[in-house]
Image (tube, rainbow, N blue to C red; front, side, top):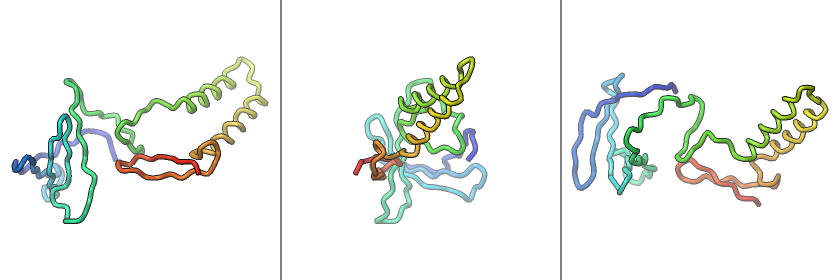
Length: 152
């Protein structure tokens, strides 16, 4: 995956029964076309493949109305998965680990025994992740590629 914005043209469209049907052509390959159906629901729209066989269930792509002046992000990380509501802000626990790691290494005269102790404590905590309080955990997959954890 590479950054940048693609501009694929809509080559056919029609509106019927409250559904906008679109056919989009790959700008690099005119034989590569995908058909979609879009339905507006309040302040959002749902886009699904228009030619999915009967009985096949696929989650729709969800679009929410952006505020005026919003632009397409061009700084996507190539090896990262993104999910709705995602954030680059670290969790409080990860921030505390990072801050402690920096603190013990930033002293004028670094106490390497202290650094070794805190590193060992951190590794012990990290070896427990994603378990809840180092107990066995069950990770369940929810729709839309998000995860939840439940302690056993």
